Length: 197
Image (cartoon, rainbow, N blue to C red; front, side, top):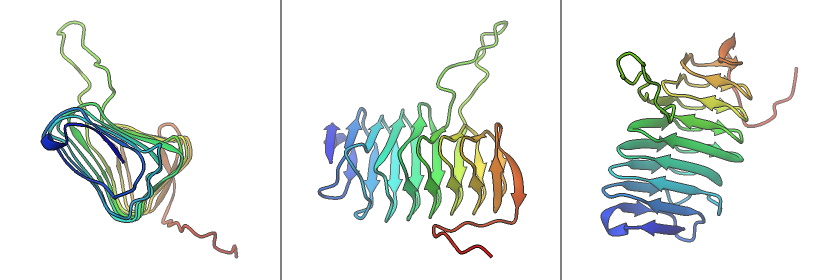
């Protein structure tokens, strides 16, 4: 793991011999990757000041890109995996919380903000504050999906490929579309391809 920046001003724990890059742009941040996380040269963390990134055991992070401004909290639960290129984006203070056993297809973006300001002309007031993203245990997010600020996804839910999530999705649901909506309730999912009846 290549670490760029001031290690004395930050706390970094990464598996020995792991691949990827951690770029420390600020101070007072903590980056912790469990010892058995799998990374590759495409794994990248870019972190500002006063941030906390905590990635639990047995996660697959090969081409995961994490960008944190200042005062950001990111947590990834154990046994979670990211396929292809996925991005966790927090350009403003906020948090992204991912539960245990989650699975993300390639080209998934998760963001706590719009990354630009929308301003009311008459008052000059900004209208689009950031909002946290919360993903419960065993959520499967399909390829090319967007999980935008304020998203909450319940346990066991499947988000179909290409969906755009902007609100709360209940647990054990199949959700698809733009914006994502529930098309079936009372479902679960497995990593294995089970035999059909």
